Image (cartoon, rainbow, N blue to C red; front, side, top):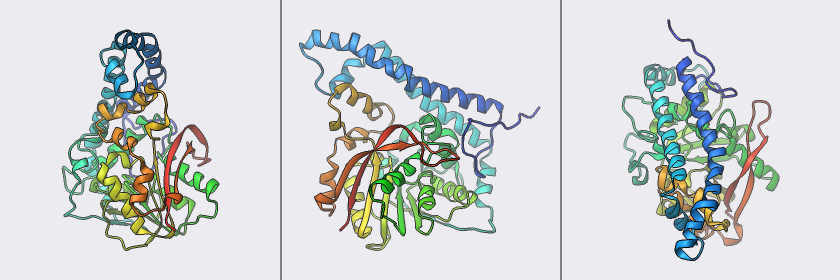
Length: 389
């Protein structure tokens, strides 16, 4: 008997490009969601107890002092069974999540490609791909988040698999649903921040860097309906999916395959340039190039704003720093740690911005609902921004 499609997650946002699922796939997805939540809450909190009661006393006994930094904490906990257990499960969760999502997408990939390519009567946005695009080394060298093939690999003509895998539970599960049903909490956090901090700011041309499938691109069209919104990324599969997803949801947005370090857009052609959790997936030189390129592209009075996790130096406790640095050594994100050690104010100044116009502060995380896009959720985001005067 053919299994019938059921709802994968309660409250998960639906649209016309989502892969269909059957009962067993949904059961596995819900198990993975529960596992992520357990690892992020009870099991995650248990690491501090184990560190304070077992690991740190042993370290003090051996060295005559407490750990000085996150690196010493990381080395100290490596041989502890609890940390080994937690870390193994956390890596296994990511690998299993993408394996399961990949199986779901693979069995219907032809249909997803057809859906992405189908003619639409009221086509609104554009899709601009570059057949000669060169993937940057910092992306080509590894599979980010343990996602097989990362965000750019194509295994067939007109491939959309990477986008479908990331959208159909990848981001939602990894964040335990804390970014809302459509995974767009980052962008609504930015809009909320701008409305509260700079209420008169009304951009007319917006560039979203590292847009993947458009989760954090669409909200800018919601906030400023008359603005032209462009999302750029290096991966053709995620851009094809982003375009089709956006059209299905009724938005007018352009998606283009471009490297944020060096784009083809004209000088002073944007009012607002933004990204959400993007910089840490590049490289040291790329961050400098991205900021300098933003300065070139911004009109006078325009704003560059990146959402990230805060720098390590904002946390005095070496254990807190260790927890925030875990992805560097375990989640195929080697630039996570080095990026959060960078002095981004100096990067902005080197890229052409005046020091007085650089902003670094925390803003509340927004967890949108279907009824209210601006519900404040747990936690905060780090904002790195700069005005071009």
